[in-house]
Length: 385
Image (cartoon, rainbow, N blue to C red; front, top):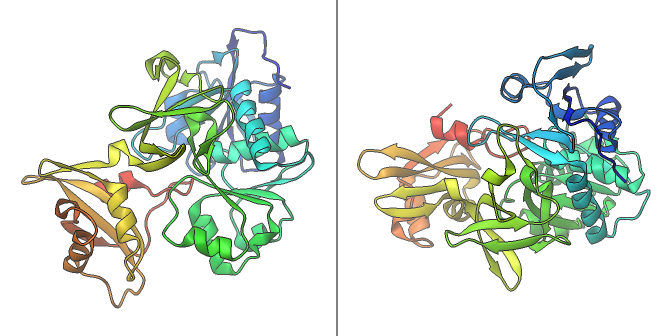
């Protein structure tokens, strides 16, 4: 479907635009080769990405202006600024062929028919939102694009398929939306809180859980099983490795060879493959070294999330002179007037995990900080900002 432009140094246009037809048309032109490569950015916070990723042009609602940056290779169609959950954003360079391979495999796995419409209520500046638009192009169906997430608008969209993060699914459940109206709800971006999937499915939702990243053109594993032509394996250190036509071409500041291992992309996630299905255990950089023991923060988070007095929780490491790092539980209580104590949470964890994994510090919040893509802002929690 796609063709590559012939010029060796392709302009890179930053799209600082709200979700809508103008942004969709620019992405379509980039994928077809009729327009410059694009860097979709949220109008809310574009400054850091613009300074780091240096596009040649910037398009806003006021028009296009030159920016004096550097172009990209001829086969690059889209650059995605990473979420920045662990540091400054990197520009993930994706070809049209990688994006279309992912979208086509997704549509086949879901059995989505041509003409069926997708709802885009995730930011197109993130790969999950971008891929909704790519699937729409392959389906030859105009996408339904919402500028902001609104449960009532989502419920009444009339779309057959939608991609959500767990926070959005939770809000739809709270609003009483009829989730059975969607043929498919793709759910990814973060681990859902305990009980959410079961409750949504009991309410009629047809949910497919996804795993992937910007470097894999979005979700490349559906319900634990890789998409067509995608291969998985686990490295000796526990990291998940991915290969296949969906992989990125490198970072804006470097070459793919610096991050690919014989054609395999080493993710930042730990996992295992059990009975042919992938189980994600947590992020490798979220491993907390405390008193000489290694604690996977996601494992502690999963246990604490089942505590009856906790509405939401994240676990991070804090530098500690005695332990090296201390396990910190950041908790949103269900009832602010009856908050759990550190002692209660330590006892709860010790009954289910090794004693060294129990939190040594408790921080209470009214809500966890979120990145624009719906993930918990762990960097903010680590620094206390």
